[in-house]
Image (cartoon, rainbow, N blue to C red; front, side, top):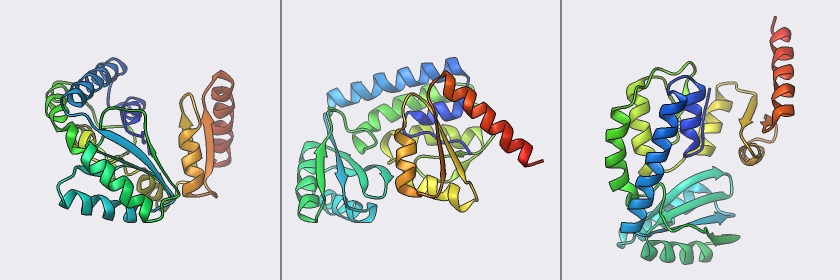
Amino acid sequence: YAAGHSMGEYTALVAAGALSYADGLRLVRERGRLMKEAGEKAPGMMAAILGLDEAQVSAVCADVSARGGVVQVANDNCPGQIVISGDKQGMEAAMAALQQAGARKVAPLAVSIAAHSPLMQPAAEKLAAAIAATPIAAPRVPILANTTAEPITSAEAIRAELVAQLTGGVKWTASMQYALAQGVTDFVEIGSGEVLAGLMKRIDRQAGRRSVKDVDAVRAFADWLAARQNQAG
């Protein structure tokens, strides 16, 4: 499987051969431009909630939304680390309620847009046209979709996912749990840091984790992969 967190979903698609590198860059640039534009027209907030599970945070967000605010779970990163997103009214009410519900920490993020929330709907509508005009192929391996935590394997499903993830939450915990349930034992993060490997440690401490972030790590990963393939026969 391949998976990418939020914008990283485009990276996963390029790695899996569903999207060309150039088209991936173009779409990411357009996505960022449209999100910034949407954020300027409808400013929002995001905050990290530590110490509560996804069900608790979702219930609070649903209660606040029912009373007129805009707030929802934007990222379910790992057990005990949830990010919420929405407008000022909804976010302030939700943050206060989550603090009262026993959150260990409620930390506003240094952003002025509400990513992965309904406030990004104008961006999603405009990005849909760019995605529709971009060549997309079936991936070489299934992509674990951010918004459903389930595998997608067709160009049509990929197009729908890329539009949906602008307003939908990133179900990262559920995505990794799906992979574990399918028998995946090793998780390899390819990028400049070790954030996802750290999240995986919180999701399942027994899972194999590797971070490939520089030339030496690429060589070490290639050696490890060759050894695994030799062991498999």
